[in-house]
Image 1 (cartoon, rainbow, N blue to C red):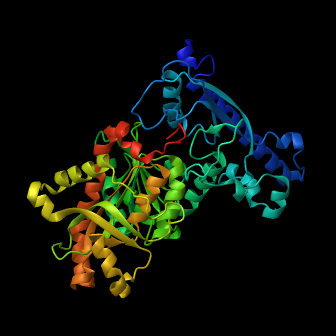
Image 2 (cartoon, rainbow, N blue to C red; image 1 turned 30 degrees about the vertical axis):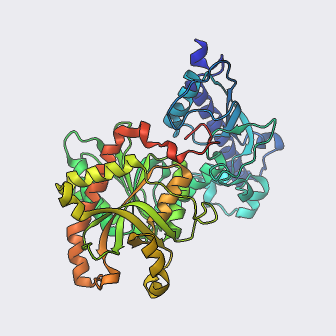
Image 3 (cartoon, rainbow, N blue to C red; image 1 turned 90 degrees about the vertical axis):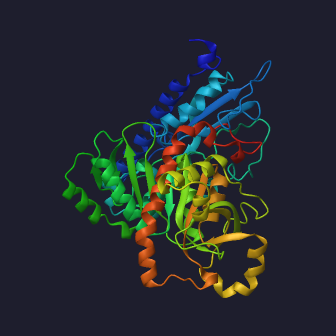
Length: 491
């Protein structure tokens, strides 16, 4: 092997990921076996046995000599020389992602890769799978915690993503935004909130705040599964049921109807592809910025390619009509939920690649262009509140909204955009005007029904078409706008 392909005689990226998979599997199996033995016979793990319950560690060392190669790529590059490291969980699932990050670091920068065992223990809840017999025993959580590693919240944080980590001499720099225990924590929360296994959540994510969008997504997904030679091969529903390509129509419809989505706070529906280009998930986050933050805090560890908001808003301008679209290019963050993490004075930029794709998708789906499209699709600032009854404070809010030139109001999109900015996930917002609270056009039952029937299907199709457009732009989609000057090498 050449020095360039092996990283100065270190491991190749493929060898490194193989080693990570081996070490993680061995540690997880050792922990599971110890749990099963304790449940069966009460034998506690020895200190030597417990030393095996540790995450693998990935180390990448870069000691440049001579001219440093320049790249416009926003990720898989170094900001500073030295040793970079992170603990890794579920390397088999993240294999493609890990290889995409490691290969340029070796091939372009000549970095050296090593893999070892870290000091970070794997908490026992993170190796338990549904069906494990020891889960159903009479053991208390406190009893298990006395003998096995548990999640320690002091060790689960976003210091790297938030830029609050402190570099110390003789210690490595972070290689990734999230370490293993932070990732594992979120993977388990995703199962709880979405009702689907995190392994089935796709890298292209649509967020909505209305179940009607989900209903139309399911109609479209079932049509895709029935389409000859289509790219999608299965649909995973909340609760774990799966509809596969080639199944009977009546059986598929019955499976979808029986899905217990109402049991989950933010149900997800995952349409998976048979190739490596990534399918689409739609998540109904419900109403409010708190849910929006909760969902994105956990989904971000999967390193999705993009999340898009397709929901409803109130139009704030007389010239707007119900059913018009709002393409957000700025956000007034009156939701307040992220003010301590991303201060309000920090701008949340619109991403050109996403904005252009959303507008192009609107042209394709509506068939309208130029002035005709501009009459229905308006670009502007959206104000997001944490209070659904913000109208009761109109006399206080009027001046601020006027100064911000806001054209629409909602409750979630500012949080979702700010979380994308904070957690380095490309984002975009296309809302549909469902009422005009300042002009006497409120959602009454009859008008709302007509609006939903007409607008939701078209709006969803625009979101889906946007994903198709963005699939071929991954190189530019993961934008430098989202990267800080002391960014870890991994995106």
